[in-house]
Amino acid sequence: MGDAGPARLVLATHNRHKLGELRAILSPALPGLDPAAVVSAGDLGLPEPVEDGLTFEANALIKARAIVAATGLPAVADDSGLAVDVLGGAPGIFSARWCGRHGDDAANLDLLLAQLADIADPHRGARFVCAAALVTPDGREVVEHGALVGTLATAPRGSHGFGYDPVLVPTGERRTCAELAPEEKNARSHRGQAFRALVPALVRALGS
Picture 1: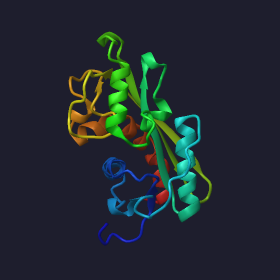
Picture 2 (picture 1 turned 90 degrees about the vertical axis):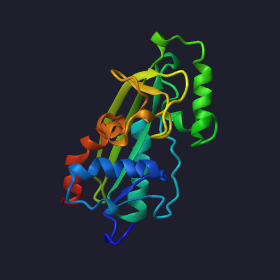
Picture 3 (picture 1 turned 45 degrees about the vertical axis):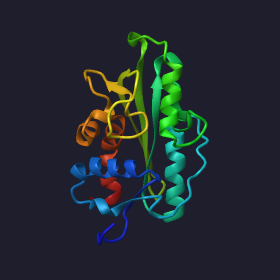
């Protein structure tokens, strides 16, 4: 993490990709905040709480509250996933464990594409959705939302990103999210929208 001083904000994740995205999204909006002062729950060796909420917002708050209780620092958490039209919004909150195992991106993708194998292009609408929560030690809680609408490719494409990025083609694009450069993705992604909407509350919480 370098010599940037103590952590000032904790992201409730063990996913290094998400930490990198959060730093990249927040740096332009909070120029006074050293990116290295934003650390993850994984960096601090904290356990992952049980995400038993029934909505993205509920799960984001569960994670952020757990970090604040453990560290006494402001915490940001997101819960995000893929909502497929013909599946009634599934995988939804189960996106990371759609195959039955948490975090197996390849297996999740394989299962989803198999389930949609006979669905024609006009009916492959889907969207990434995100709820991002900020919880502070004094009990303040703010939740913002973001969505990236598109269609699903029939096979994974691209080497950037993670999760379902290789199969979602944003509306107006020919490339999947995994074929977009990171800065392109962050500029329009569901997570980028939600985190940027949190910036005013983060400024107040961090005094930046």
